[in-house]
Length: 171
Image (tube, rainbow, N blue to C red; front, side, top):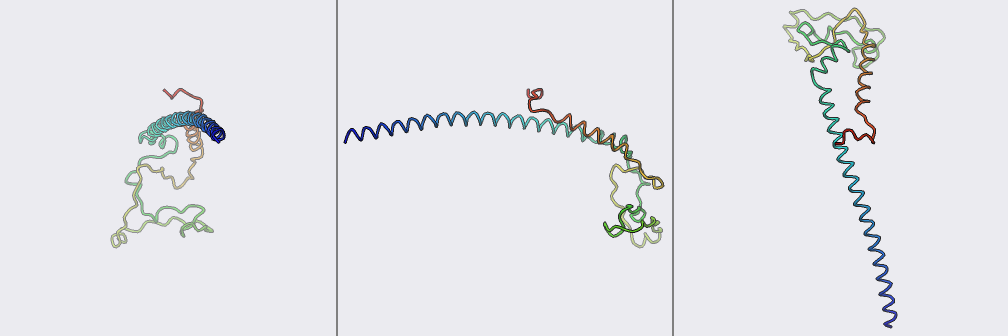
């Protein structure tokens, strides 16, 4: 009986030793994986920081104002740009019923006389700091500047993307 008990103890010892051997290599593999994940996480955090800095640089008000002036033909709003909502023309493909297509575009209605507006005060809509220069007699030809602007945005976005093996920024 002691021989059978010794054999069982020896087999149990061999199984436990093999299990500990496998467990130690599994722990080493998981530690290496954790180190690699932490390295990738820190690299992504650095990339996010760089992208946030680039976004802050590209969204500066003076930069955006310059782009709006040069590429979109926008200019700062003036007091003469504020008009009643009724004076604005409807879109060509939409009618006055909030998105309903219309058969023919109505003519722009004149603004209310001063006497009528005194009876019911009309609060002018909030004017953004930049507004498209109004040319009611001519259709806006913003196709060419928009293409240049799109190309410039694509170039900036392309410059922001970098290959995974690029180590220039990892310093």
